[in-house]
Image (tube, rainbow, N blue to C red; front, side, top):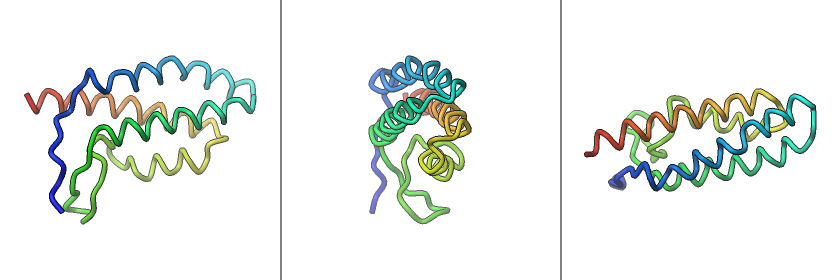
Length: 115
């Protein structure tokens, strides 16, 4: 199965990061107040991150021998699973924030490399 060669378009992916920026402070406040609304907001944020990954395309990881999302950062698969499994934990929010930050940097790097 050949890898999908897909150009990374920063402008196309920017709305996902902007949406996260509008949600993150609200989610953190809910966690700090031990408010259960944090879980609902995190579910929405997880969907946004999943869509971001899908829109970034996939490649074959020769080391793992499987198809992976192009935009996933180092250990991203395991870290994203942690976020989904521990959604009610404040640490899940911290991890998702880190994933968005690292993915944004990867988008910038890949978009420059493909020019």
